[in-house]
Amino acid sequence: MRETERFFCADAARDRGDSIIGTAPYGLVWVLIEYRGGWPVNGFDGLDLPPGVKALLFASAQAARARVLLIRRHGRRRREGPKCWAVLRYDGSGAHRQQWGTWSRGEDLAEVAAALGTPGELGTPGETGLPPVVLVCTHGQHDTCCAVRGRPVGRALDERWPELVWECTHVGGDRFAANVVVAPDGVYYGGLDAGSSVDVVGEHLAGRIHAEHLRGYTDLPPPQQAAVAALIGRYGPAGRHDYTVTGTSRVGAHWLIRIIGHRPRPTAYDVEVRVRRAPPHQLTCHGPAMSSAAVHEATSIRIV
Image 1 (cartoon, rainbow, N blue to C red):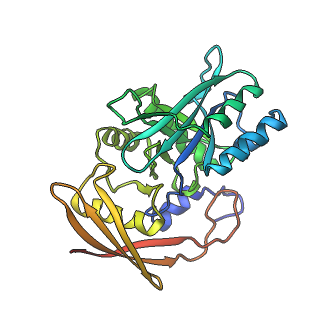
Image 2: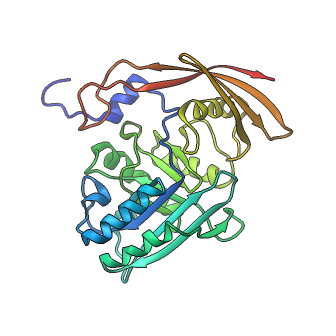
């Protein structure tokens, strides 16, 4: 690359053929805070809020192991009146809990800390008026590729599902931009563009998760994510809870994952996953020059 050429981590990752499988970061709780202005490079941490409220919310989120994201509608389109906040939880069973509120002053965000200590409304998407939230990372201050690739995806999804879709700050995996997270389902998708994002989200909302573009499920560690993705890749699209991990063992760099498939009848699978380190590369637009990422590859699937 010539000195004058600008480096884009997502372009480089595609040129290398980086695998997205098993790259969803762990998380069961999301705190969403609508912020219509420019987003600081470090997201919520960079907001000018009352120190006491900020410390309270940060401590509450840390205790709940919650990821705090700033959100806004596509194109920073402004609405009059208070901004919204939400606490979304995934419980692993297909049900989820959501709490929503509004804020005008920084002091109002103390309600978010209180909400993190209460369960919230229980529901299942499509049955109780609690649809999932579709988050598109467009955090250009954090990584250029998130904006360059994320904003067209945000626009396409917003045109199709304007009430479900929010742009958000950094979700992890800049080189896989455009990244979309469906919460609180806890499903990460990467490598999307405007066209593929509409197809992927449409299929997800219809209860069909495809292996293509799937980074993983946030309630599973990376080897288990890779094992589930391998089954979806071999046997076709699946619902969020069509596969259940029931056992995991490890010998060195090899993992053996036992999974029960629940359709059309219960079937047990043993999936072997090998973990290796990729050669060092620059993995983000502004990150260290050389970093080595873990790669998770399913090497065999056996029906038990």
